[in-house]
Every structure is written in structure tokens, then in C-alpha cells.
Length: 121
Image 1 (tube, rainbow, N blue to C red):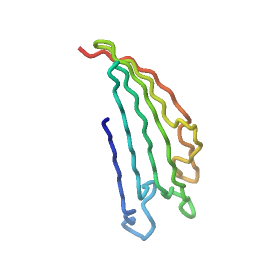
Image 2: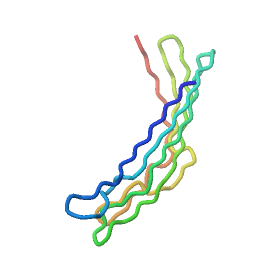
Image 3: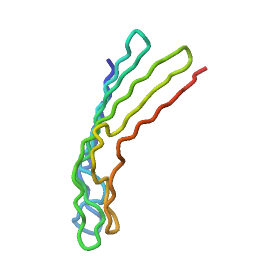
């Protein structure tokens, strides 16, 4: 069962002219993805994406953007040169703030489900 994992630590470098944290740069970001291919050509996968707290570009003071954890999944089927897949992101349909800037904060994407068909020659 293949496992893919990534972690990024930014260290929140200070801006060149002050001691405030860099905007829209989380101190920690991590992802984990597990997938498994059955003998019947079916492939399934699950994953998680974590984004740590960061600071938006506030007008008077930086807006604190809370951390969030999202879960994803996929199922695919291979038929000769074709691969059919169904991918879902933000499975729990979590409401979260993705970023803040210029005095406004923006919600992240809701649950999305995308189907694909890929042909390889």
C-alpha cells in the first residue's frame, strides 16, 4: 500500500521591515495520502490535509486565520488503457477560512466531487 506524506514548516520568517509574521504563510502544513490497488483493478485512496494558523493582511492589525484539517478520498477502476476515477475533496464539507487579505476573509472550497476518464496509449 503506497503512502505519500509531506510536511512543511515555514518558521514564520519576519517581514524585512518589522517583526510581524509573514502574511498568508502557515507555520505548519502537512498532508498524508494512502492508496491501495485491489487485484480486480479497483484502486481506493484516502487522505488528509492540514494547514496551520497563519495571519492575513489586515488593515489595522493582521487577522488570525485558524488552522484547519480536511479529508479527501478517491476510487478508480482501470479497464485496459482507460482509468475511470471519482475524487472527493473536503469530504466532511467543513466550513473553514482559507485566507484573509485587504480587510476581507474568504471561505475555502466546499465538498467537491470530480469524475475523470483517462486514456493512456
